Amino acid sequence: MKIALIAWIAVRELLYEKAFYVLLSFALASLVFSLLLGQMTYAEQAKLTLDFMLGCTHLSMVLFSVFMGISLFQREMTSGSISMVLSKPISRSTFLIGKYLGQMAMQTVLTFAMGLLTMGVVTSYGATVSYVAIAQTIVLIACEIGVLTSLTYLFAVNTGAITSAILTISLFCVGHMRGVVSDNLKTGGELLMWGFVRAAIPDFEIFNMKQLASYGQSIPWNEMGWASLYAGLCIVFYLAIASLCFERKDILT
Amino acid sequence: MNSTADIILTDLTKIFHIGVFKRKVGVEKLSLSIPRGEIIGLLGANGSGKSTTLKMILGFLRPTSGRIQICGRDAGTRSSRELIGYLPENPRFQKFLKGRDVLSYFGKLNGMGGSVLSKRVDELLDWVGLGKAGEERTQGYSKGMTQRLAIAQSLLKRPKILIFDEPMSGLDPLGRIEIRNLIQRIHSELSDTTIFFTTHILSDVEALCSTVALLKKGKLELYCPIADLLTKDSENYSVTVSALPANLREGILKGNTSTETPLGVTIQVSGTDLLMNQLTELRKAGARIVSITSKRQGLEEALFSDKISIQGLAAGSVA
Image (cartoon, rainbow over all chains, first blue to last red):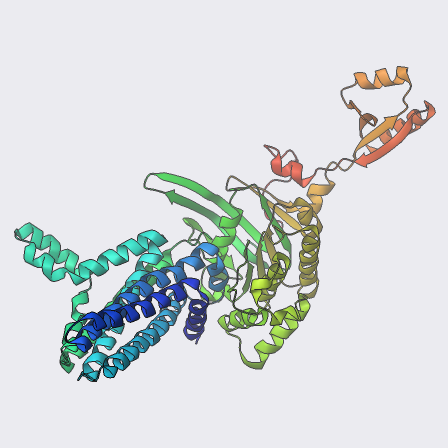
């Protein structure tokens, strides 16, 4: 009940945030840009447009997740408004998870709205596309964003706004390049060290199925299931650590 | 320890770690026992540990050592926060919420709901004088209105303890009077509620508090009923006279207890009998009495002097 209330206030806070509209404009502009890029190609307009639009949806949601997450949490911490909330009989975890759920609700709605727009655009080309594949890709983007947002909250609890943004984006990049890094390591020591790092960093490539959707191939349901389960476990893991850290954190404002 | 004490602090210490090697003592071995129904003013200069103490009571900061009990419950727990209403130094609300929505939001976080909450919200909005303004967004609220709304949210669940951090800071004189009156009203209507507040404005402490605690560099320097502090030395007077005859003037000024001022000569007199004798002599000599003031030990003097000079007002429990 209290989590839902905090989540609802977080949703309203996001709607009131100027940065939200900046990011939303970026998302829409990037979709329009994808559309124009698709028009400029000689063949496979629908495929290229779909590819670009899914990529833009992904990028927009990554930016939204990191910057709005930090903004939602850090502003409460720096302005001191958190003290009035936490003086009430609620746990800090309730506050943290409430904020997370509010942001996730907004992000999920936006991701699916952008997905629907993408479907509408590629349909207008009259090309044969797999709607199931597009929907699956959108679900996986939402899962990835869920993991990334939980990571953002983990850093936001422990560090300042800029450090949180740098760390989250760095881990996002490393999480997408795990394969590349593994392939380039040779010595046993390097591999051992990388093994430890890998254990802490989520594998974001699991959620990257945009290429399949572009070629009209749907993702096997067992892979979808595993990816969703993996996302769920990562979210629980990172939010649990964030909650533990937040419970022990001194609130100075 | 006192069984009727609402807040008991025992050997409370908070050390802040600044970087890896530096440490700063926020509060050191602070022991206080605050009785029920009192208004306690926590005084001290910036960095003396006032806000640190309040934040430890609320559970925002974890004590390095020591213990805090709120009506027998450990501080920082959800059950202890059920008993507390808190007004932060600079209350801020979500700008998009109306005054009424703010109170509903905090009421729900307090576990209230339904018609009970809605009735309480109406009651409190009227009580703090925000009846109509409750329908407006807090974005347009003045500092005074924000402060009154914040006081209303602290009263939602009729708390046993009210903790106000600098409730009058940043307000204009009118706003200060309004908040001061509100605190007096709270005390008269909720006589069982303990009000614990910090402030820099000494006149507010004099007007509101029954007891005062003074912190210096994290240590409790003084804890006593305010009356003891204000009435001590009340038999010392300053008499300012003008039109003093030259021979008398020279004689008086030779003494260490007199000073020349633009209004004439100010003479320090100890004791009421001596004052009466001095006045009679001065009038006989043809001097004109400009003013007579009782020189009491002011809070300011107590706060800013290096060492408290008053005998018998050492830190300790008044409960």
